[in-house]
Amino acid sequence: MIMQEIEDMEQNFWDELYEIEPEHFGTGESEFAIKCSEVMKECKVNRVLDIGCGYGRDSIFFGTQGFNVFALDYSHKALSILNRRISASPLKKNVVPIQYDICKGMPFDDGYFDAVYSFLLFPVGFSETEIEYIFSEIYRVLQHNGLFLACVRTGKEVSSFFDEKYIRSKLKMFHINTLNARNISVGRYHFNVIEIFSRRTA
Ligand SMILES: C[S@@+](CC[C@H](N)C(=O)[O-])C[C@H]1O[C@@H](n2cnc3c(N)ncnc32)[C@H](O)[C@@H]1O
Image 1 (cartoon, rainbow, N blue to C red):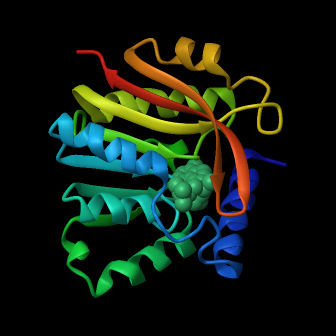
Image 2 (tube, rainbow, N blue to C red):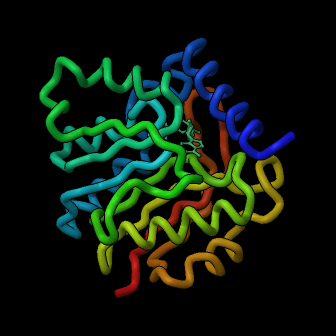
């Protein structure tokens, strides 16, 4: 099977999942988003990119906190749910849904964002090469000292390579403030995760 077919299958998987269960990961924002919102306020963040935003639980929360949010996901279904949720609300002004596959790069200028945020996007479904490329794109679209805040799954059930050592080795161009290993609950799931609080080095 060629790569494009595999990627289409993965995208279809998410579309079908959100079709069957539009609030698969619950309704409210994640605890991680609440922590990150505080960090972003301290760092005077204005523009934040939420990659793998799903139906925008955390993007909407960031919007209510006054950030200008670009909510990116490749699932058409997820973004149609997000669009519906914000269409009749003032959040339409500061939450911008973007349908895009991040394996194809990021459709933004260099240094466009004060922060890039991601909750449970990594590493499921990505190869090491894709992860390296996405990290390099995150670096590119962040301004100097911009924040990279991500909660990533870890452990044998998702991947054999994505652990603390690997994250440190791949984020050499970032200053890592904290890596927190935790077990969290999301909807009906329990995941082992690592929370990454880092910033792009100048
Ligand atoms: C585990 S879900 C997390 C969704 C959201 N952050 C939340 O917590 O509700 C991962 C999301 O990443 C998206 N995704 C996976 N691969 C992607 C890619 N290559 N480009 C853009 N989005 C992708 C999926 O469509 C899905 O919505």
